[in-house]
Length: 124
Image (cartoon, rainbow, N blue to C red; front, side, top):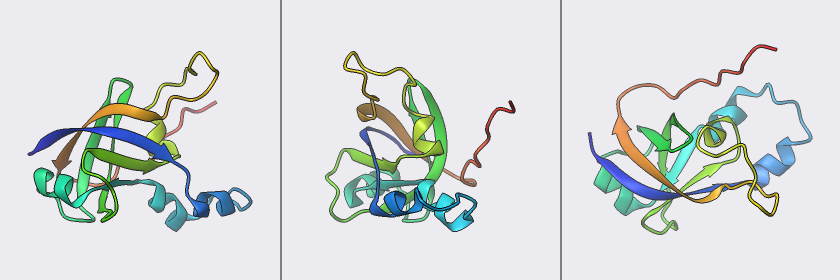
C-alpha cells in the first residue's frame, strides 16, 4: 500500500462546539470524528477513494480512520477533528507556553484495508 508524509492539523468544527452542550452517546457524531481530511492530490498519491481507510502514524502513536477528500485543502496537509482519534497522534504534554501541540505534526499516512479503529478507553 502507498505511504506518504503529511503535516497534521487538529481542528475543532462548529458541530463540535454545538455538540459540547449535548450528550456524547450519539454514534453518528462519533463517526464524524473518525475522519482524516486530505487533498485530492494526496488521496491520489495514496490510491484511496473518499470513504476509504487510512492509517495515520506519528511519533506518539497511530490510529485508523476514514479518508475524506477536501477540495479546499492544500496538498501536504491532513486535518483531523479534535477527539479520540486525533488525540492518539498528539502528545499529552503541553508546550512551554502551556498549550497543546496539535498543529504542524509530521505524520505518515498509508492506505489500508479494514475498519475504522473503535475507541477504547482504560478502565478506572
